[in-house]
Structures are given as C-alpha cells and as structure tokens.
Length: 593
Image 1 (cartoon, helix red, strand yellow):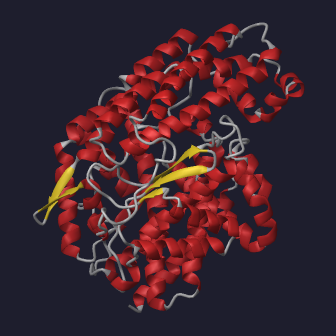
Image 2 (cartoon, one colour; image 1 turned 90 degrees about the vertical axis):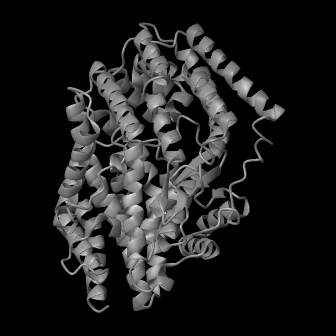
C-alpha cells in the first residue's frame, strides 16, 4: 500500500491561498451577488414562456449565463477539492453547503431559459443571432426540455426542496461512506483502503477484507437505505409530474442518446455475457477454483507474476506519458503537465472520497482524484482520468453552456486513452506480462460491461418497486444479488456475491441511470480506436475537433463524423468482438500457466 504522506496530493493554492483567504471570500461573495444579478436580468428581460419573446435579449442573456457558470465552476471546484479529500474538514463542508444553497436558484433559472428559448421560432432565432447559432444544439434541446417542465413556481419549489431532499440524501451517503472504516487483521482502515485489498495477492487477505467490508456496510445499511429510497422516490415523483414516459427517459435525454441506440447496445451486451463468463471461469481456475466458479472476493484477484502486476507511482506516470505519446505530442504533454503542476491527488487515506474522478477547474486546467493502489489497474485509472483532463483542454475555448457534455460522450476521451494504454502495454509484452495486462484490461471491461449491466438491472428494478413503496435493506440486497446473478450468470458463486454494492456506489444517490454511459463510452472508445487504426492521420486530424464538440450534438450525430451508426447493433458487436479476442487470448495463456 502506498504511503499517503509521500505520494503527491493536488495543489489548489494557485487559485486561492486558503478557504479563509480574503481573495476566496471575495470570490464567494461575488458569486452570490452575480447569481442575484442574473436572476434580476432574467426578470427584466422576461425570461420565461412568453407570447412575445425578445430577440434582442438573447445575446446578453446567454453571455451573462455563461459568465456566471464559469465563476461558479471555479469556486465549486475549489471547495470540492477540500471536501473530497477530507470529509472531516468542517469549514469546507460548511462552505459547500452554503454554495449549494446559493446556487439553488440556478436550476429554476435554467428551466426558465429553456422555456424562453423554446418560445422562439428556432430557425428564425438561429438565423438572427450569432450567439444563438453558437448554441444551436442547446436551443433545439430546449424545445424538448420545455415540454417536461413544471410551472415556474413548482420548479423553483422543487429546487429549494432538493436541498433538504435528494441533495441532502446524496450528501449523507458521501459523508457516511467517507467516514466508514473496517478492521482487517487488527488494523482499522478507511473503507477505500479495505476495498483496495481486493487486489491483494494473498487470497486469505482478500477474503477477510471482503467479510470486513460487508460487516462495515452492514453498520450503515439502514441510513443508506433511507437515503436511496429518498433519492429514488423524489426522482420518480418528479419524473412523473414532468411527463416523462419512465424513469429512464430523462437519462436518455440528458445523454443525448436515443432509446433505439441504448437498446442496440444492450442487446449486444447481453449476447456477450457468456463470453465474459469464459473469462471469469478461466480466471477462477487460475486462482485455484477448479470448479470454474469465482467468489466475489476473487473478482479482482491478481494473476500471474506479482512483480508484473505491481506498479509504482513513478512507473505509472511514465507508462501513461509514453502511451499517450504514441498517439500525439499534445496528449503526452497533458500527462506530463498534470504531474508537473500537481493536478493529481494520488493515495487513499482516511476521510478521502473513494473511487476516482476528474474535475474541470478553470480554463484548460483540471484536478484528478485517485485512490492509487500500486497496481496496473491503477495505471489504467490514471490514463482514464487524464483522458478526461485532455478532453477538458479541448473544451476550454467553448462557453460554459457549450461545455455541458452528456455522460455517454464525456467518456469518449477517457476510454480512448485507456485503449491507447492497453495497446501500448501489450505491444512488446512477454507472455507473463501479457497475461497480467490482459487480466487488467478484461477485469476493467468486465466491470464496465457485466457489472454495469447488473447495476442497470438493479436500478430499473428499484425504480419499478419504489413507485409503490419504500424498500427495506433486505429487499435492496435481494434486488442487488439478483441483478448480479443475471449479469454474471454461473461464473460467480451465488453464495458469495456483494449484497451491499447498492451502498458502495455513490452514483445511485446522485444521477439516475448514471452507469450505462460508461458502457457506451467503453464500446464507443474501442470503436473509435478501430477507426484510428484504419487511418491514423485522418483520425488525429478530426479527434480534437470531436472532443471540442461533445456538447454540440447528439451521440448519433457526433458518431456519424467517423462513419459510425450507433443505432446498429453490429457496431457494438464489433467492439465487443475486440474484447472477445482478448478473452480468447486470455484463455490460451491461462491454460498454459
């Protein structure tokens, strides 16, 4: 395990000296004043559904909205940098709460903006205003969004109530999870470090960590079940009142993905599940389960030579930089810049949020949170998050409203960068190294294809049942393990699943149906890489432009730039065939190990 006192933590002092600095206080107070001014401007210009929309106000309103969102991005990111790395920082938590309250009026203002833009004749507006033409995708989507709005007072009330409703439940989950600890072999560890023990080379450590983790989640299952019921109940109620056909439809709209596209991808995914079963069975035998059935605690068991699976932080950063350099100099420069300018918070520690993320801060700058465990998997996560950071550099010249990239497209650069890394590592690998690299790649792909499918099944079932009543801890556990069995099939031991994965994953407590865009991103990224291999120079010429435009079109429209029809199941099948080929390779290597 990495020593968190040695490896780098991110530096945000370039923005403000501290949370108590006068400059930050001025920015914080200025943000509040700017939100009030924006609301006053909306009132003055009649920004709401109207029979006589003011064409002359469009440019002023869009400019003011973009400016405010840029200011909010910086202050929010700065505070979140403290909250996410120390859950016990009461000052940061207090400021985060203040920011949520301060920003609450923006949600109803945005619904007013959509309704107002929808009241124009779209084509007349786009022809008459340069600013409108620059935001054409936003304006066309506004017409759809406006059809799913409550009245203005109702939307304002919903936004205010969310502070003590869904947002509060989400915050409760984050605070509880960040403070959760478990004892493993006499040592009290933060839950993120306990989960990292799933990668430990010692099977008994993995098993004990799994049992300790379940015991820990059991101590907080009741409040987290209440939180999940609160979030899903609120979401479902609002979806019905806003006229969405079901609870999935808002997620499809938010991701600019049509239902036939998702259905085509899901059919291809379901057809691939037996192939991932082959991978899991081969892995089970490799780690000592002759039956070919894997218990949950061995899903992430390292295979092959332990030395080949270990990775130092210095080695990780070099491997990613080299892999990125094989694609382009700007991509490599981004990886080197992130390290040199201390954008990255590396190791797990008590009070730090779990998982990994990249957040845009200002201009083309980002900050990356990791919980690096010293494995090749952690190297892949680094490549993934730096892919997001590169994407942010390409979005830097866009307005705030243009940068609003849906999740399905937000994963484009991150998954593409993971694919570049995998191909780079495999290129000259010896058999022992190849086995470890393939395991790392397939382990991640299994999570994104198979486990995320289980999460989709679980969330759909929760929404269906939550419409009638709140669900108990036992019922949530039953739905979770049932979804895992459906997705993983006979490859996993039905008596050794993870009953509380609903408590582990923070996404359930935030954006509904958050996870399937990762599957979209993985398979779309693999498909893009195939296009890159077909014609590298042409692909490079259009790649940065694609990333800069991810907030300017639907998923299907952007895919068509590279001749891809995402409504065709065959495209998704072809991407999954790449993974099937790696599974074949893995089976051959494990048979000879």
